Length: 482
Image (cartoon, rainbow, N blue to C red; front, top):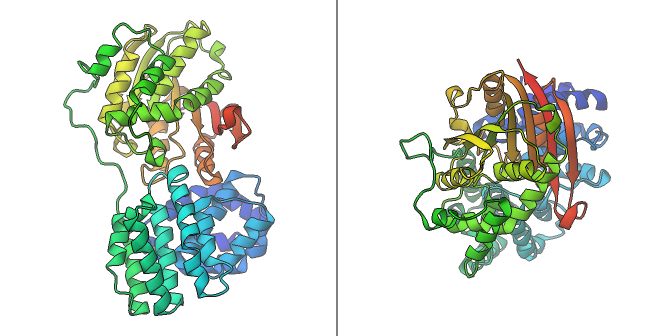
């Protein structure tokens, strides 16, 4: 039985639908990121659910991030298949005052309220502006943005005449020539322009074959480490030499980055989610996101029950980048005179450039006894990489990690790895910016997976609700893993 057939069978009432979603939301995430062949087996059941369960859908409790994420997912499914019933989802969004982000706003412009074919063409610029903004501020890669544009292009080709197909193609060529929008430079849009649009049926099929190619493509990060040594550290560089006589702290590191950024390009695509590969990107990340990064972490540490910890503890910094979360933690312990030694810090990061710098930063902290570097993506981690002593206390730092897209790593696999390798008492400090409800629920899904957890601190702040207008999603909890 398909997932959506089970969903239909469990949607006899709002309560039963709520229960089903709370217990199975990870399965919908998995479907969203599965192969197109698998998705196609669900197509007609997805259509049936949207068409027949619209009233139940409208009455769901949308104060929960799980249900907000679910409606985001079915909007994407409807867009992917070009269902006219997407209007049912829009009614749910409007009546419950839900916002799904700029990419989905772009999709609405070609899926809804089209008065005549000229609307498809006249909205080209507005659609691209929304997609570019989504690419820069909401999405981790250009994949979903490019797919939304391809769906738009396919709809024009299939639902209008050749005159309008040629018009949208000219708009695309002009925008790429003028470099108006970064996402339009995608290799898949180069392939799109090679498709013959004189026959709308064959062109439509070719565009969807191209979309299938994007979804079939493996987005998992390749193994990054090339060094043979287990411990990686940056040595004998201009940067490492500049730290020799410096009283190291987060602020000192960021001040160096600010100076290094003078006269260089400071745009960083994808919010720094993609592993950084050039030294200037390390500086730009600190310039653009450093202060906000520090403030979010400090707000978590301020609520953390350090008084409960009476022995040296171990830190695991997941997706550590330059080691910023660990640095802020060490600074916080020092400035608040919390004299609990950090027995070990394990740094996990797929970028060799970043992890070497993280190790360099942390070697200067006297409170740190030992450090370990693991230069791997999460999906390449093995049990022997991470296994810890069940008698030690572990603090896990997940800073700007848990909300990134599933094609970077499998959250389900990560959770299982933690449960197998981190026996004993564990504290989790999870913080990210607020991007969308969909991404927030990915964090909450991680938290929910530890059933005997004790929540210590939880806070969501959107734009304008927290200091300096910054956003945050923070979750601090503890659990004993048997």
